[in-house]
Image (tube, rainbow, N blue to C red; front, side, top):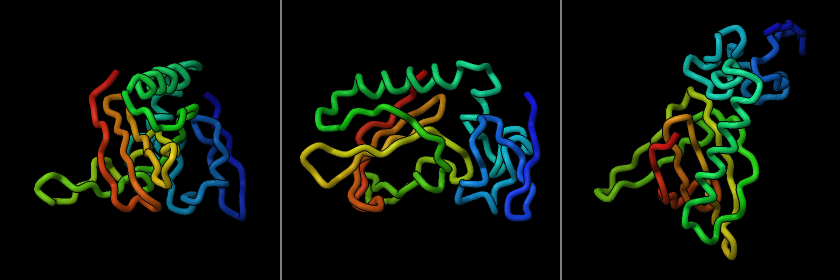
Length: 157
């Protein structure tokens, strides 16, 4: 796997392991680069880099399998999930209330996960999807993650 340096705004950027243009990412000033850090750009694992290193089709196969799992859930009003994107944990890691009232986060802010946000049919609420290669979660929330609740959190794969 060949990694190439390139300059952007005076800053040398490494080509990513997955081929994404890192210069367009809002985190490019704080990211150490996945090629340079062997798939741990924020000091924790990137699932995309991990699966890209496994071979040309590994990431696509993981995404397809995960989307199948999501579609098998009995969530009638969730819009169809057609793609999963690399998302930094801090972006998708909203707080959820436990039955005892305690607020918790489920994901590591520095890892890169697969995820997406889709609409809830007939509502202004959304469904958020977050996953790694061991667990996935579907949650429901209002704008900007308010009034969040976990719909499904399960071990998979």
